[in-house]
Image (cartoon, rainbow, N blue to C red):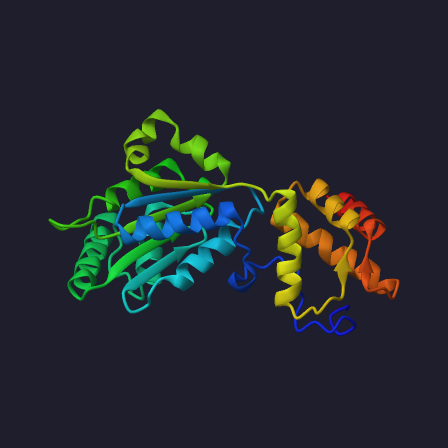
Length: 270
């Protein structure tokens, strides 16, 4: 509604995980480097934890986009309410293969053949599982067994687990200690500090084509940070509604009261 009024090329605060809009705060930069390091050094299991709305999925897509397609084959699993068999089939499908077997033993054998063939061609294979806190114990155990697939020199599969803090609690269970011991690289996303929230808002406005309008007052930005607690998804929601409020006033300035209206609306919806 306000895009053309402010001369924006696109909406700046959509909540979809667009890697183009990723703001690399210190915590996000550190997490991205950990992911790259873990894969490049073939560490096997890599863990990324973050609160809801902290940008895990966006960071994941940025990470996948930065992997060299001439070297890496990737599989991204988004639906984690699945069985062991469904997980094995999903991995093969994501790698562009047609699952040929029905039982888990044969599916694992097919995955092993596929990985070996690709390793022989100089490929590295990365499996990324988002929302991993929803995985059942049996599926996590299946992933651990998949991590056993290896040649004399390297693991056949690099596995990245991305999830909410509940995933850390899940992995802390004694029955998952074998899997936990294999996680050699881990990182945790933290909410944005006030300074980073200010930079985050300006970053997204600039990428959306803003040239000074709309602009957020200092009080407005402080209010955004205070209510959002530095969670990017909530920041996006507030800023979108606050800009709409300023648009209705026919103003280039997004002020404290615009943010207060946005907070009231978000609180009502919650």
